[in-house]
Length: 319
Image (cartoon, rainbow, N blue to C red):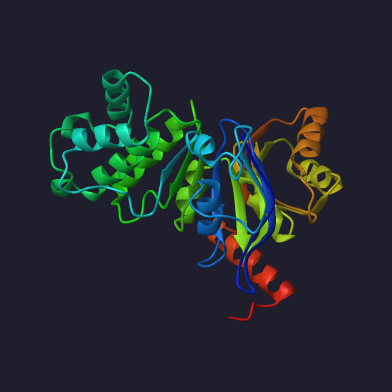
Protein backbone atom coordinates (compact mmCIF):
# COMPACT_ATOMS: atom_id res chain seq x y z
CA UNK A 1 0.00 0.00 0.00
CA UNK A 2 2.84 2.44 0.89
CA UNK A 3 6.35 2.17 -0.52
CA UNK A 4 9.03 4.72 0.45
CA UNK A 5 12.45 4.28 -1.19
CA UNK A 6 15.70 6.22 -0.73
CA UNK A 7 13.82 9.36 0.30
CA UNK A 8 16.07 12.38 0.78
CA UNK A 9 15.27 15.96 1.69
CA UNK A 10 17.80 18.72 2.25
CA UNK A 11 17.40 22.34 3.24
CA UNK A 12 20.49 24.04 1.84
CA UNK A 13 23.36 21.92 3.11
CA UNK A 14 21.40 20.50 6.04
CA UNK A 15 19.80 17.06 5.49
CA UNK A 16 16.33 16.46 6.94
CA UNK A 17 16.00 12.94 5.51
CA UNK A 18 18.93 10.72 4.57
CA UNK A 19 17.66 8.09 2.16
CA UNK A 20 14.96 6.53 4.31
CA UNK A 21 12.79 3.66 3.12
CA UNK A 22 9.98 1.47 4.44
CA UNK A 23 6.99 -0.55 3.22
CA UNK A 24 3.55 -0.62 4.84
CA UNK A 25 1.01 -3.26 3.92
CA UNK A 26 -2.72 -2.84 3.52
CA UNK A 27 -4.60 -2.89 6.82
CA UNK A 28 -1.59 -2.24 9.08
CA UNK A 29 -1.63 0.27 11.93
CA UNK A 30 1.91 1.61 12.15
CA UNK A 31 3.37 3.95 14.75
CA UNK A 32 5.85 6.51 13.41
CA UNK A 33 8.09 7.78 16.20
CA UNK A 34 11.06 10.08 16.57
CA UNK A 35 12.42 12.97 18.64
CA UNK A 36 11.61 16.56 17.69
CA UNK A 37 13.38 17.41 14.44
CA UNK A 38 13.94 13.75 13.54
CA UNK A 39 12.11 13.99 10.21
CA UNK A 40 8.63 12.68 11.06
CA UNK A 41 6.68 15.69 9.84
CA UNK A 42 8.92 16.05 6.79
CA UNK A 43 8.22 12.43 5.82
CA UNK A 44 4.48 12.77 6.33
CA UNK A 45 4.32 16.04 4.40
CA UNK A 46 6.15 14.42 1.49
CA UNK A 47 3.84 11.40 1.56
CA UNK A 48 0.76 13.62 1.52
CA UNK A 49 2.09 15.75 -1.34
CA UNK A 50 2.50 18.97 0.67
CA UNK A 51 6.29 18.96 0.35
CA UNK A 52 8.69 17.97 -2.40
CA UNK A 53 11.64 15.62 -1.91
CA UNK A 54 15.24 16.14 -3.02
CA UNK A 55 15.38 12.57 -4.33
CA UNK A 56 13.83 9.15 -3.86
CA UNK A 57 10.28 7.93 -4.36
CA UNK A 58 6.99 7.73 -2.49
CA UNK A 59 4.32 5.44 -3.88
CA UNK A 60 0.81 5.23 -2.42
CA UNK A 61 -1.43 2.45 -3.69
CA UNK A 62 0.73 2.05 -6.78
CA UNK A 63 0.65 5.79 -7.61
CA UNK A 64 3.83 7.86 -7.52
CA UNK A 65 3.27 10.90 -5.30
CA UNK A 66 5.73 13.04 -7.27
CA UNK A 67 4.52 12.16 -10.78
CA UNK A 68 0.78 12.09 -10.04
CA UNK A 69 0.27 14.18 -6.88
CA UNK A 70 -3.43 14.86 -7.39
CA UNK A 71 -4.23 11.17 -7.87
CA UNK A 72 -2.09 10.15 -4.91
CA UNK A 73 -3.76 12.71 -2.61
CA UNK A 74 -7.12 11.09 -3.27
CA UNK A 75 -5.79 7.94 -1.60
CA UNK A 76 -4.79 9.71 1.62
CA UNK A 77 -6.75 11.18 4.50
CA UNK A 78 -4.59 13.42 6.68
CA UNK A 79 -5.14 14.74 10.20
CA UNK A 80 -2.37 17.24 11.03
CA UNK A 81 -1.45 18.02 14.62
CA UNK A 82 -3.69 21.07 14.45
CA UNK A 83 -6.98 19.89 12.82
CA UNK A 84 -7.92 22.16 9.89
CA UNK A 85 -11.25 23.27 11.35
CA UNK A 86 -13.34 26.40 10.83
CA UNK A 87 -14.76 27.28 14.22
CA UNK A 88 -17.51 29.51 12.84
CA UNK A 89 -19.01 26.58 10.93
CA UNK A 90 -21.40 23.94 12.18
CA UNK A 91 -20.12 20.36 12.06
CA UNK A 92 -22.40 19.34 9.19
CA UNK A 93 -21.57 22.48 7.21
CA UNK A 94 -17.86 21.89 7.66
CA UNK A 95 -18.01 18.28 6.48
CA UNK A 96 -20.05 19.33 3.43
CA UNK A 97 -17.40 21.97 2.72
CA UNK A 98 -14.62 19.36 2.89
CA UNK A 99 -16.70 17.05 0.67
CA UNK A 100 -16.81 19.79 -1.98
CA UNK A 101 -13.14 20.66 -1.50
CA UNK A 102 -12.10 17.05 -2.08
CA UNK A 103 -14.44 16.76 -5.07
CA UNK A 104 -15.81 13.58 -3.56
CA UNK A 105 -17.95 11.47 -5.90
CA UNK A 106 -19.55 9.20 -3.30
CA UNK A 107 -23.27 9.77 -2.50
CA UNK A 108 -23.07 12.81 -0.23
CA UNK A 109 -25.74 12.26 2.41
CA UNK A 110 -25.19 8.55 3.18
CA UNK A 111 -21.41 8.94 2.98
CA UNK A 112 -21.24 11.83 5.46
CA UNK A 113 -23.79 10.22 7.78
CA UNK A 114 -21.76 7.01 7.84
CA UNK A 115 -18.59 8.96 8.69
CA UNK A 116 -20.39 10.85 11.48
CA UNK A 117 -21.64 7.53 12.90
CA UNK A 118 -18.17 5.97 12.76
CA UNK A 119 -16.58 8.97 14.50
CA UNK A 120 -19.57 9.39 16.87
CA UNK A 121 -20.24 13.04 16.06
CA UNK A 122 -23.71 12.71 14.56
CA UNK A 123 -25.25 14.09 17.78
CA UNK A 124 -23.36 17.39 17.32
CA UNK A 125 -23.77 17.84 13.55
CA UNK A 126 -25.85 21.01 14.03
CA UNK A 127 -23.56 22.62 16.62
CA UNK A 128 -20.84 25.21 16.06
CA UNK A 129 -17.36 23.70 16.11
CA UNK A 130 -16.23 26.60 18.34
CA UNK A 131 -18.57 25.38 21.10
CA UNK A 132 -17.33 21.79 21.12
CA UNK A 133 -14.74 20.13 23.34
CA UNK A 134 -11.22 19.24 22.27
CA UNK A 135 -12.24 15.59 22.02
CA UNK A 136 -15.07 16.35 19.61
CA UNK A 137 -12.79 18.58 17.54
CA UNK A 138 -10.32 15.70 17.18
CA UNK A 139 -13.18 13.45 16.06
CA UNK A 140 -14.22 16.03 13.48
CA UNK A 141 -10.61 16.20 12.30
CA UNK A 142 -10.59 12.44 11.82
CA UNK A 143 -13.98 12.66 10.10
CA UNK A 144 -12.66 15.10 7.48
CA UNK A 145 -9.74 12.75 6.83
CA UNK A 146 -12.20 9.92 6.12
CA UNK A 147 -14.19 11.83 3.50
CA UNK A 148 -13.77 10.13 0.14
CA UNK A 149 -13.01 6.83 1.90
CA UNK A 150 -9.22 7.01 1.27
CA UNK A 151 -7.39 3.71 1.82
CA UNK A 152 -4.56 5.43 3.76
CA UNK A 153 -5.14 7.50 6.90
CA UNK A 154 -2.26 9.52 8.41
CA UNK A 155 -2.82 10.86 11.94
CA UNK A 156 -0.37 13.32 13.50
CA UNK A 157 -0.74 13.51 17.30
CA UNK A 158 -4.45 12.56 17.29
CA UNK A 159 -4.80 12.39 21.09
CA UNK A 160 -2.74 15.41 22.17
CA UNK A 161 -4.51 17.49 24.81
CA UNK A 162 -7.30 14.96 25.42
CA UNK A 163 -8.44 13.65 28.79
CA UNK A 164 -8.16 9.91 29.59
CA UNK A 165 -11.76 9.13 28.58
CA UNK A 166 -11.35 10.94 25.25
CA UNK A 167 -8.04 9.16 24.62
CA UNK A 168 -9.69 5.77 25.07
CA UNK A 169 -12.49 6.78 22.67
CA UNK A 170 -10.05 7.96 19.98
CA UNK A 171 -7.93 4.84 20.52
CA UNK A 172 -10.93 2.61 19.87
CA UNK A 173 -11.83 4.66 16.81
CA UNK A 174 -8.32 4.22 15.36
CA UNK A 175 -8.46 0.46 15.95
CA UNK A 176 -11.76 0.30 14.06
CA UNK A 177 -10.25 2.15 11.10
CA UNK A 178 -8.06 -0.88 10.43
CA UNK A 179 -11.03 -2.72 8.95
CA UNK A 180 -10.97 -0.61 5.81
CA UNK A 181 -7.85 1.57 6.02
CA UNK A 182 -4.08 1.49 6.43
CA UNK A 183 -3.21 3.82 9.33
CA UNK A 184 0.00 5.69 10.16
CA UNK A 185 0.00 7.19 13.64
CA UNK A 186 2.60 9.73 14.71
CA UNK A 187 2.59 10.54 18.41
CA UNK A 188 4.79 11.63 21.30
CA UNK A 189 2.54 9.63 23.66
CA UNK A 190 4.42 6.36 23.46
CA UNK A 191 1.93 4.42 25.57
CA UNK A 192 -0.68 5.37 23.00
CA UNK A 193 1.40 3.96 20.16
CA UNK A 194 2.07 0.79 22.13
CA UNK A 195 -1.65 0.32 22.82
CA UNK A 196 -2.86 0.90 19.24
CA UNK A 197 -0.12 0.05 16.75
CA UNK A 198 0.94 -3.38 15.53
CA UNK A 199 4.29 -2.15 14.26
CA UNK A 200 6.64 0.70 15.13
CA UNK A 201 9.04 2.65 12.90
CA UNK A 202 11.52 4.92 14.69
CA UNK A 203 13.32 7.73 12.88
CA UNK A 204 16.24 9.71 14.27
CA UNK A 205 18.13 12.53 12.58
CA UNK A 206 16.65 11.65 9.21
CA UNK A 207 17.38 7.90 9.37
CA UNK A 208 15.18 4.89 10.05
CA UNK A 209 16.82 3.26 13.06
CA UNK A 210 14.17 0.68 14.00
CA UNK A 211 11.32 -1.07 12.23
CA UNK A 212 9.77 -3.88 14.27
CA UNK A 213 6.49 -5.39 15.34
CA UNK A 214 5.40 -3.66 18.55
CA UNK A 215 5.82 -6.86 20.55
CA UNK A 216 9.41 -7.22 19.27
CA UNK A 217 10.51 -3.58 19.39
CA UNK A 218 12.84 -4.15 22.36
CA UNK A 219 15.01 -6.32 20.13
CA UNK A 220 15.98 -3.14 18.27
CA UNK A 221 18.05 -2.06 21.28
CA UNK A 222 20.50 -4.85 20.46
CA UNK A 223 19.89 -6.43 23.86
CA UNK A 224 18.19 -9.71 24.63
CA UNK A 225 14.56 -9.90 25.70
CA UNK A 226 13.29 -10.81 29.15
CA UNK A 227 10.21 -12.95 29.74
CA UNK A 228 8.23 -13.88 32.81
CA UNK A 229 6.85 -17.39 32.32
CA UNK A 230 4.60 -19.65 34.34
CA UNK A 231 5.04 -23.38 33.77
CA UNK A 232 3.25 -26.37 35.26
CA UNK A 233 5.84 -29.01 36.09
CA UNK A 234 8.55 -30.09 38.55
CA UNK A 235 10.55 -26.96 39.36
CA UNK A 236 14.08 -28.35 39.25
CA UNK A 237 13.56 -30.29 36.04
CA UNK A 238 11.83 -27.36 34.35
CA UNK A 239 14.58 -24.95 35.34
CA UNK A 240 17.29 -27.29 34.06
CA UNK A 241 15.45 -27.70 30.75
CA UNK A 242 14.95 -23.93 30.40
CA UNK A 243 18.70 -23.37 30.69
CA UNK A 244 19.30 -25.82 27.86
CA UNK A 245 16.95 -24.12 25.39
CA UNK A 246 18.84 -22.68 22.42
CA UNK A 247 19.16 -18.90 22.72
CA UNK A 248 18.52 -18.70 26.46
CA UNK A 249 21.20 -16.63 28.18
CA UNK A 250 19.75 -16.94 31.69
CA UNK A 251 16.91 -18.78 33.42
CA UNK A 252 16.02 -18.51 37.08
CA UNK A 253 13.15 -19.30 39.42
CA UNK A 254 11.21 -16.28 40.67
CA UNK A 255 9.94 -18.22 43.66
CA UNK A 256 6.23 -17.63 43.07
CA UNK A 257 4.01 -20.70 43.11
CA UNK A 258 0.37 -21.41 42.34
CA UNK A 259 -0.22 -25.06 43.12
CA UNK A 260 2.11 -26.97 40.78
CA UNK A 261 2.72 -23.86 38.62
CA UNK A 262 6.06 -22.08 39.12
CA UNK A 263 7.25 -18.71 37.82
CA UNK A 264 10.56 -18.15 36.03
CA UNK A 265 12.53 -15.28 34.54
CA UNK A 266 14.16 -16.04 31.17
CA UNK A 267 16.64 -13.80 29.34
CA UNK A 268 17.37 -14.40 25.67
CA UNK A 269 20.67 -13.90 23.90
CA UNK A 270 20.98 -10.74 21.82
CA UNK A 271 18.78 -10.79 18.73
CA UNK A 272 17.32 -14.25 19.47
CA UNK A 273 13.60 -14.97 19.72
CA UNK A 274 13.33 -17.86 22.15
CA UNK A 275 9.54 -18.27 22.15
CA UNK A 276 9.31 -21.04 19.54
CA UNK A 277 12.12 -23.25 20.93
CA UNK A 278 10.65 -22.69 24.41
CA UNK A 279 7.25 -23.88 23.22
CA UNK A 280 8.68 -26.97 21.51
CA UNK A 281 10.70 -27.92 24.59
CA UNK A 282 7.66 -27.64 26.88
CA UNK A 283 5.51 -29.61 24.45
CA UNK A 284 8.13 -32.36 24.30
CA UNK A 285 8.08 -32.69 28.10
CA UNK A 286 4.30 -32.18 28.29
CA UNK A 287 4.69 -29.26 30.70
CA UNK A 288 1.78 -26.84 30.19
CA UNK A 289 2.71 -23.18 29.62
CA UNK A 290 0.36 -21.24 31.89
CA UNK A 291 1.59 -17.74 31.12
CA UNK A 292 4.20 -15.78 29.18
CA UNK A 293 4.71 -12.02 29.15
CA UNK A 294 7.51 -9.71 28.18
CA UNK A 295 9.37 -8.10 31.06
CA UNK A 296 11.83 -5.28 31.43
CA UNK A 297 11.91 -2.05 29.46
CA UNK A 298 8.78 -0.15 28.51
CA UNK A 299 8.49 1.51 25.10
CA UNK A 300 9.69 4.83 26.53
CA UNK A 301 12.94 3.20 27.69
CA UNK A 302 13.39 1.42 24.37
CA UNK A 303 12.82 4.64 22.46
CA UNK A 304 15.36 6.58 24.51
CA UNK A 305 17.99 3.84 24.29
CA UNK A 306 17.64 3.33 20.53
CA UNK A 307 17.82 7.04 19.71
CA UNK A 308 20.70 7.68 22.12
CA UNK A 309 22.68 4.75 20.68
CA UNK A 310 22.09 6.01 17.15
CA UNK A 311 23.14 9.55 18.01
CA UNK A 312 26.34 8.30 19.68
CA UNK A 313 27.10 6.08 16.69
CA UNK A 314 26.69 8.79 14.04
CA UNK A 315 27.42 11.89 16.10
CA UNK A 316 25.12 14.85 16.44
CA UNK A 317 24.47 16.99 13.44
CA UNK A 318 25.84 20.47 13.32
CA UNK A 319 23.05 23.06 13.57
